[in-house]
Amino acid sequence: MEHHPSGFAIWLTKLLGLPQHSWPHFAPGMHFSILERYDHLLVSILAALIVLAFSLAVKKRLALVPGPLQQAAETLVGIAIGEAKAKIGHGYEKYVPLIGTLGLFILVNNLLGMVPGLGTGTANWNIPLGMAIMVFLFYNFMGTKTQGFTHYWAHFGGPMPWYTFIWVLLFPLEVTGLFIRIFSHSMRLFMNLGLEHLISGVFFMIMPFLLPVPMMFLGLLVCCIQAYVFIVLTSVYIGLAVAETEHH
Image 1 (cartoon, helix red, strand yellow):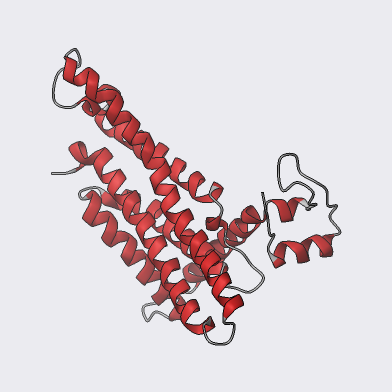
Image 2 (cartoon, rainbow, N blue to C red):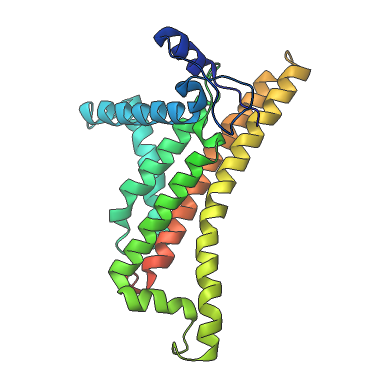
């Protein structure tokens, strides 16, 4: 398996004097430091720190007449509120922090990939997969909590009683489909970001002087759209899980 660590990870490796060695069953014949091997985690941690710094800076500068940072934050929060309200309905407010934080983290992580020398954690499947699993556990927990364990999980068998043939047939199919959401939720973000960076790199090598600006614009568009799509699906899944008890 080929692996190209980001320039940031290589620079930190040299700065800190970290040892490089081979990793079992990973990129045979190549040697990496721990930062170079797990540079997707390094970039994701950097993205999380940027989100935290941004949030603290906005909180510190809250004013009746918003500045640029507050305006940006209000726009992002407004998008999260709009999606939560539209997809979840009554009681949506308590889900806005999760949806908004996910959207901002993914957006920053995506955008870091456009910075020379940096990669993007979301182009490595482990990061989108981790977020998709977290969302999966969250909305199923909330569905179980709001509807009760028996009622929530029994509804996957349809409206028929649990002892009927149709219920027994539908239940494993519906639960399998529920788990497939983890794959589809994570792969959509991973594939789009990974392919965007791969295609951009190929075109930059072919036509380095003509394509950078339009390709960067396209990359920016993809970064924003994929962050938005992830939180839309998160809102939809939460809404479906809590629908029967939260909607009025």
